[in-house]
Image (cartoon, rainbow, N blue to C red; front, side):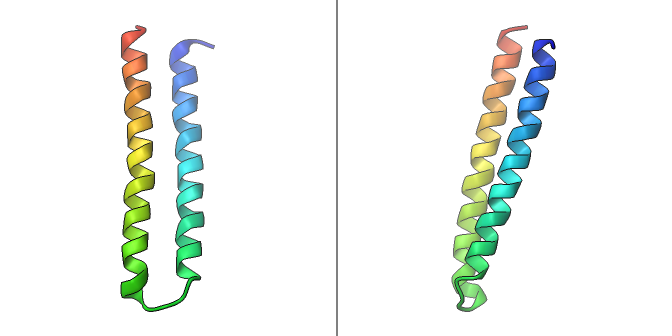
Length: 69
């Protein structure tokens, strides 16, 4: 396998893991109870944090891909 294929597969695996983790967190938040306004803050914060980390990982992989071309 060449380097580009490995980086593409790493991105795919990271995306699947991130979406699974996000779904797990959202389901757990929804089971806490309370009204929507209480849950909304946790849902928004966890979504921003999880997908922010995914974006950072993608940017690092893209930088690694460009620097080693």
